[in-house]
Length: 314
Image (cartoon, rainbow, N blue to C red):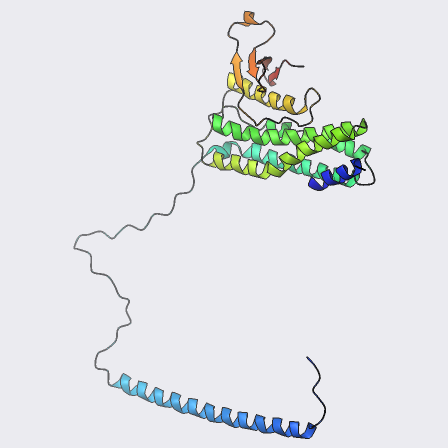
């Protein structure tokens, strides 16, 4: 995406031949040299043959005078004591056992698919928005508006341990940031706010550069973690996962944002209300960071549909 930023920024900021002579002498000299070399080669060949014949004769004499027979059997170690069983063969290395990577295989595959769609959309953006034209055609607008990261989010199982959940949310946040950045850039270009469009694209570019490393870190931790005990669909763990994903979406695309959540991804603090009369209409509070007061949130579970959870903001 760097090339895209550069183009948009530039748009916005206005062997030698042998010598002649002595020809026959040279030819005679060459012929003589060849003859000398040939005769030397013949003499050398005879000497080698004579040497080989002499060496062969000596080897044959030595072989016929050897008094002890030779054995061609392999050298073996000392015999085992009577009644001692044969040693057991070395066991083969055991194959890796199950891990959380098995439970997250669907998420990792979905994240890679979404990443490829985002890269394709960025390339399409590059081909449309260049040094001579800053506009968005209908094909690009449709391509960007169809960028959804929910496929990856839906593949995250509830019940992940905190350290692994954080790594997974970092990957999901990167996808969400990039999709929001592209959508925001299109909206800003349509509105003629070119500087704002450039800011959106820079947000997405930073996340695109680190995506492969973030995904690799999550895969590595999953491979070394125990299998996941998946939480029930109607559990609070499942509700909290839905709320965390909603917070990520809101920070990156809500209230006019375009992937500009600058703070690092954290496991936000979630407090549920045990007594609904404390704050009617909400299910608890969620601390989205930034130094402000925790926001109230609403969380509702519907059988067959799952949790709908979101902070009450804006």
